[in-house]
Length: 216
Image 1 (cartoon, rainbow, N blue to C red):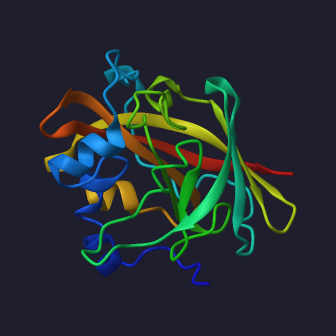
Image 2 (image 1 turned 180 degrees about the horizontal axis):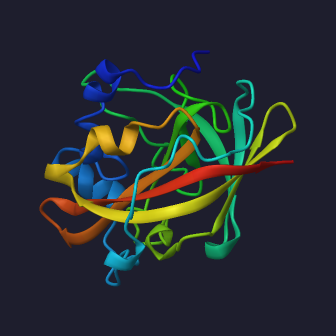
Image 3 (image 1 turned 60 degrees about the vertical axis):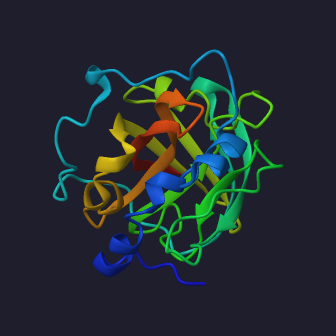
């Protein structure tokens, strides 16, 4: 299992991924995955945006050796979800957990393991074809300082603190900003969000930026 952080070439392959992250690239697939809820998931406000890049000179927790993640917990929004490995499809876009498992989150298994040096990526559905909430429905409500815990196969838990939450138009997704990193152990959580139409699905992606702050 590769655990290196994505290279710039791989990040370029990720470029189409925001179109599929929990919502898919085609209109028909978008409707199947994103659901038809009448209410809307929380949107991050400008106050939740990233104010500055992570400072690579700032002291941080020592990175962990690679180990597969098995569960993700975010107490602030009531998430306690199994993590499954996901990869890229034939078009180079990041797959999501199966549509019949909306309560699961997916970890990009060919990238960085959460807690190791580099940027780990996890994705999940915002809602379901029937309109019920998905695992990351409330992701846009997270605020700076919220805790994300990821249990790993080595029986250690990587604890991350949220630095920012941002909303990006899916046609102007900043791949290098999202998938890049400082060399420190970092985490990105990604789902759909923003406006929604039945023809195209969700129009944006919610991205959570978090940094490792403890290991238990």
